[in-house]
Image 1: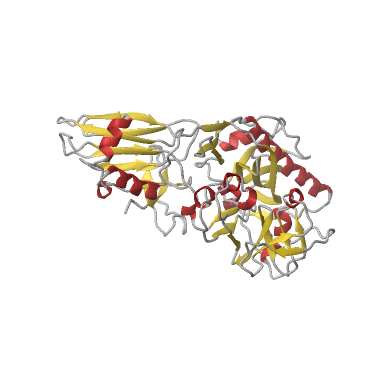
Image 2: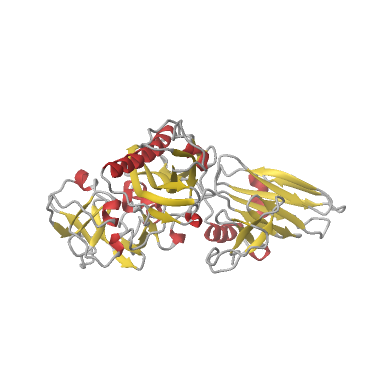
Length: 496
């Protein structure tokens, strides 16, 4: 197989990135003034801490797209707890209020830096918990460039605004405590018809939604009348509309609108119709007909947290609309087909030399990855979420073992050649570009060995089966770690 053809296969299967990138390490600081009452010294985090909290996409002077992944410099719960200030009480204190964060994302959209947050306030009384408040917040500020401080400031502002909203709800006596089972303390808030009137059978009210929470609660602003017209790009079914006689800068202040019969989400300066599909809403997001870097990279809520990952590759010729779902926690648009969104994590290939002097198997293992056994000519790949420190990979042969550190602070392809000596000793070499290209001329997809990956953190006592639905498609495999607890792994399909 020629190298170019192999690279094409690998790129399609692993979304192989082409440009170098760097990480943005976030160290949020400051002390937020907390609403009255006792607060726990623990922040509960229910989002996937294995993933970055944001991917910032930018175009350079040559029109090439670069991705910068935002990661915390410490475990998310510790980084966020540092913002809650002094006077916190022990977790097991009675009557303490607990901040639970279900979703946190930073990005750069509409030429602004944004932070999306969904959180709850829980109250602990003995062994019982109740939910006093839940809401989502979107804050924005000037575009950051390469400065991390504005994203750190936006995280601080988002949590502060959320707690301000909580304080306002306390003063307005709008809180109704709801019991929370302990099992829900570390799982994301569940959207249903009881907490989201937009999902109920009640007719939508005509008005403008300044925030996503107004849409969720079916409480639009009704003080201002407005007129709509069908957008030129609409196929004639009012699927895309615009507001008459409203400046574009004013339009951008709204999340969406409702004409009294149908709800719409803002897409740039137009509004795209929402369709109810069971517990979610979908929208067919139209694509631009000609390439426009501003549209591609700064689509705002046009693409929500997927940024320019879609538009950058699809904005050169007419394309069908992209079916997106509304994220029911924060209100941003996410592509229904996840393959449409770019995955630009570093790819690290480990290959056992075809000239190895021994036929013995070599085991390659990494943190949060089930070990894979390789023999002569076989290879495997690691595509790991970025973080502020490297990942340790352990290569074990018949005689010896060793560790190397691989970085996720680059989206360049790295190839490591494993050689097995006649006596069973192994050695590992990180190949330079020339040697990497020569090796890839001879790599074959049929020699790829499957990689077992852990999509989310989940710990179980040894022998305990995973809950139903944990792994997409069902099933899961156990790997017992040295500390004697077990982790559940789901299979990742190998290359075709």
